[in-house]
Image (cartoon, rainbow, N blue to C red; front, side, top):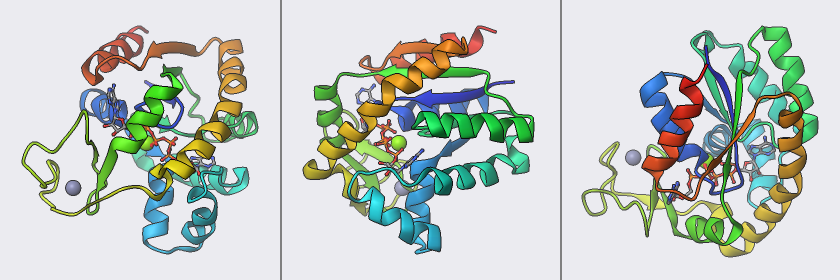
Amino acid sequence: MINLFLLGLPGAGKGTVSEQIVDKYHLTHISTGDMFREAMANETKVGLEAKSYIDKGNLVPDEVTAKLVEERLAQPDIKNGYILDGFPRTTVQAEMLDEITKRLSKPLTKVISLEVKEDILVKRLSARFMCKKCGATYNKITKMPKEKDTCDRCGSHEFYQREDDKPEVVKNRLEVNEKMNTPLKNFYQAKGLLTTVNGEQTPEKVFESVDTVLSDN
Ligand code: AP5
Ligand code: MG
Ligand code: ZN
């Protein structure tokens, strides 16, 4: 059983490698960012609250995020293992997750940190665009749709840039997340769960490195 926490700064490739992991290991992908974006699109109470933080590149309050994750981890499709992408993001959240996984008897088994330098992160985020319909992620430099203006996954022709990928927000987002990154890694290093992976390689190589960690039991 693999219960993975995938750690990495904005643009490190958490979403990209998660898709590859899901294809091979059939784990359930839980991205708090994706969940918030869905809630924002549906204008739910959580979505409206989250929007005021996300659009500025700040963190949504720990209690709101942890509640969302606990509800998700309690669903039956988690029984074959999960990938947490983007949660926890603070050591307070990491402690909350310890409590949650204890209550649900679904402890983390691995933590992988994708390591990417800041200048590369900025480039990746400013070149990213998304499918409006299914949320598939593309990149103007490294990952254009196979057929021009057509989503590979759902065939839609409408794309958008995430509000928090605009240059003025990216700067704050990176700052906010960088502050928390080292304490978070130390937290999981101390538990003996952490492996770091070079996230600056090609997506194929990043997955190979992650796969090596996951298949080593
Ligand atoms: P979230 O959506 O999780 O954003 P993030 O952490 O900033 O990470 P990203 O999704 O931007 O990057 P990624 O690592 O998934 O990279 P991707 O694969 O897309 O969270 C958004 C917001 O929600 C937060 O800012 C916060 O406000 C709130 N939130 C979420 N969780 C929270 C929490 N726990 N607590 C409080 N608030 C929370 O790749 C990026 C680009 O690079 C793509 O274009 C991709 O095609 C390209 N790319 C990927 N890998 C490679 C590669 N190896 N080589 C070249 N290009 C690559
Ligand atoms: Mg993501
Ligand atoms: Zn699509």
